[in-house]
Image (tube, rainbow, N blue to C red):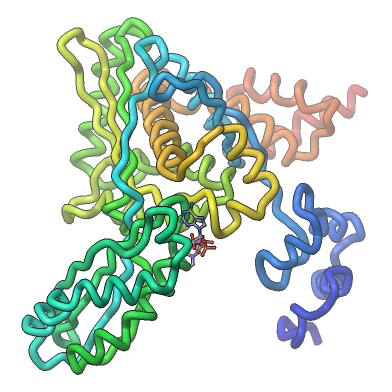
Length: 422
Ligand code: NAD
């Protein structure tokens, strides 16, 4: 009988793991070959990056052009499977550069490490005791990472909150750690674990969780851009974008999609640079909901000259060292392409791409609708799904678009006709 319980799978050589899968799912030799591709990642590296590896999952890597950020030119790598995103970012950046491009800034790269204390008899007094011992706690944390401290980072401050929960009060300590050019999860978790026994001794409580928070509200990247009304299609377009923005600001159903459009751009650069996009996603949406009302990560206003002004503020815990950023050869090449020297600079570029992406989506929605731009690329995917060969794709796409029906069954029908004629 087939079983998914395979003891020692991780110890087997890659070829044996693949043979097992072939047997398990009755894969063809071609399918096994596809799974086994490791692309730019040497086999031994990919086997060390995660567990139970059999191959890699390639994504298209495209380049967003036209980005002028703080008067510097950037070509921005984006790894994403969704059509239109790279074109939209490039197009938005082109319109923004007519009025000077993007202006950015950021906070210091401060992450929060949480330490959860329960069973504390006097939680408010315990809070004070912890704060009174701040220098010793920070010193203990910083002993864990002399490298980070050497680069100007390290534990800088403490916050202590008394949290009222269904299981009683908890004392939650936040270790505020400047992570410099690291995303910081490992660094912060190590520090949180190291100071936990000290907090137990000080308060008589018991520590359970010691882990970074992805709500990186002290690690914000910001960008601003002006889009001249003339460059984007006139007053009507400005009006349409403002209507779309205020819809998102008032309605979480629309806002989820508004922010999804922003994340199209943000995630693609985060992935291309080997960063942890789950961390970025979690942080972005938690930040968007921080007031209790899920809100847009961008703002849109009209200035005195009638031009559209957009801003974005988003937590961006990205690094240039640590995790996959320093081991993935494609990520390293992409970072070199960007020419960034600090994680903060990378975060500011990413914020600019998020703003550009949001502008492009709102402009399309407020004018011709999103589908027109999407359709021709979508039609290509549909044609391929229907089984069109490289030679057949263009003809199928053309006919799908002419028929204004972009569905697999229609593509199959067209293919049959084409092949019948051939
Ligand atoms: P890391 O520990 O691999 O690297 C960071 C270390 O690099 C620092 O602690 C420091 O000692 C050193 N360093 C060298 N030069 C530096 C510089 N210029 N600036 C800063 N540090 C420098 O990685 P990390 O960034 O601590 O952790 C990132 C990894 O943690 C990612 O792979 C992420 O996916 C993973 N992770 C995330 C979560 C989460 O988000 N909740 C939880 C656990 C793990």
